[in-house]
Image (cartoon, rainbow, N blue to C red):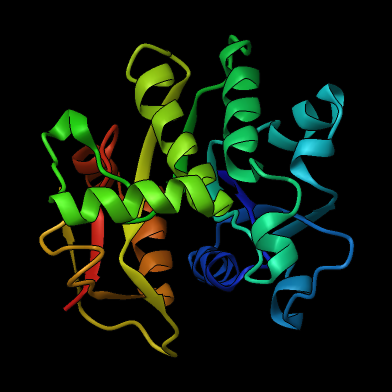
Length: 238
C-alpha cells in the first residue's frame, strides 16, 4: 500500500502522516518548498517527499505523483492569514480534488480511495440534512464572504454530485470534523452519519489527532472503509 497525503505540512496533515508511519505504511507527501516538517517525518524511510504545489503541477508530474498510490488523503486548507483567506488560490481544495479525480478516471489500471477532510459546515442535502433559518443565513454569508468556506463546499459537492458512485476507479469519504482543536493524545471520539448538533449555534469539538486517527482507520481497516465509503461522516470528541 502507498498513501499520498496532500497538505502534509499542515496541523492535521502532519498527524495523519505520523499515524501512517506508526502503522508502517509507505507514505508519499506533497509539500510546498518552504514547508517545515518534524525531523521524525523528514528522516523516516517510509516517507517519500515531493515538493511543489498541487495545482501548479503539469499533467506528467501529477501522473507521477499519484502513480502506485492506492489512497489519496487531502488535508489541504487555506492559511489563517488575510492573504491565505482572501488571496489566491481561491479554489485550492476544489481544484486539487477535481484534477486528481479527472486524472484517476483516465487510468484503466488504477483504483483509488480518496479521503477529503471537510467540515460540519457542509450540509449533505442528499442525506436529508437541513439547516434552521438562522443557520442558512449564516452559512450563506460565509459562502459569499469567506473564500475558504466556499472552496470546501465546492470540493465536497464535486465528489458527491459529479463523482458520486459512478466512477469505477474512485471511491471516496468526506470526513467532517467539528471545531478543530489541538490535543497531544488520542481520546474517545464518536463518528456519526450526520451532525447531531448545530455547527453554528452549538458547535462541538474535534481534536486533530482524533481526525487523523479516523482517517488512518479508513486506510487500514477494511470494515471501517466499508461502513463509510461514499458517505460524509461527522467526527466529534466524546
